[in-house]
Image (spheres, rainbow, N blue to C red):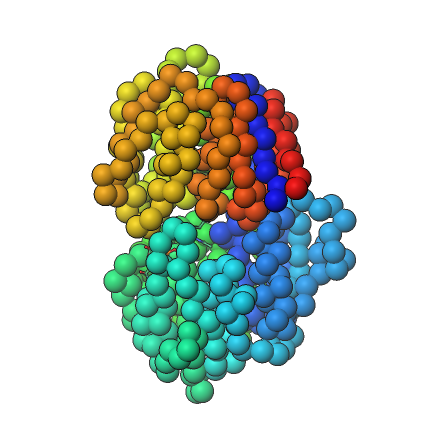
Length: 429
Ligand code: EPZ
């Protein structure tokens, strides 16, 4: 299995390009199931999760071509991909596929809306928590779907089509908001979603659906209104910049020191995290071309954070921020409110010399003056990258195992970091 070897201690300097957002790309690709026309997505990151979803969609009948060709000749770079679901050949998403990637459960919305039926495996638990699907089921039932759960599958039908309704999410959910928005786009009449997720990826999907002919208002606020239409057409749409990748590299610079332009990053997608970084003593400059991040000398000030749905501090940056706080001048508290088990990085950061104790959903981090390299591994994507950024700042060699987690969500990680002066390489086998 591949691993990443980092020799820490170099400041990061230069320009680092930001890719298209994984978490925007996945629902946008799934939206291609809603039309028999071609949906063209630009700035799709080249990631393992995108490749997996291409295979999953292929199973339902979605054909694709990359920049006009079937395969990209520039492996590893953001691409334009055309998706065409001329006809849906299978409305079942089997366990073998859904269990690999939770977001593939989201096909339930478009399949049900377009075909009047969907049979989708329950995704099961994952490393960061139990992650149930009750909100999807309640919400789709509110739109008139008949749903039962049998032998690990959700069987959903709406023989006469879905019918618009008002649905109040009892809890904010990104995935359930994506799915209900897609389903309601083809429902009869008006749907009003209250307490909807406000993440930028929701706005990106709503913009794409509107370009396809949907009538969606209010995405990005807690109330989304969808006036159903009878069919959707193709469109050309661009995936937004990855705010989590942006925040991750900004934290890496804050940790190692240096001066980096995060090219193509959009500050308004992660204001809360940028303001938090400013409080740690990192200089952030919002530019038209991206975000410039600088820390030259001066220590890292400790700052407390609590994860929240957007526009709050994102759970997907919690591990990376904890990495930064391990070298702060003092104590910080990091509270996770979205997932119940998202502290797997704590034990691994401790292997580098970090001092962290857990009190329920709060990690208490006592900053130390130096971290020392060690072999580490993590069981999810964001936890893994927190170990990479800690390794960049640690003395000596850090080896991060289970690189496949990183490949799920970070495009050309080693190349981007080594381009800014990091000593980082992938070791095969
Ligand atoms: C999305 O997951 C992201 N994934 C996650 O990023 C991100 O951490 C999360 O939103 C929160 O921001 C993608 O966009 C592909 P949720 P999602 O539904 O939609 C509970 C990464 O590293 N819940 O907003 O699955 C759930 O258990 C990934 O890129 C229910 O209780 O998250 C959680 O506690 C990890 N019932 C909370 O809601 C439901 O039916 C928020 O989850 C659905 C969710």
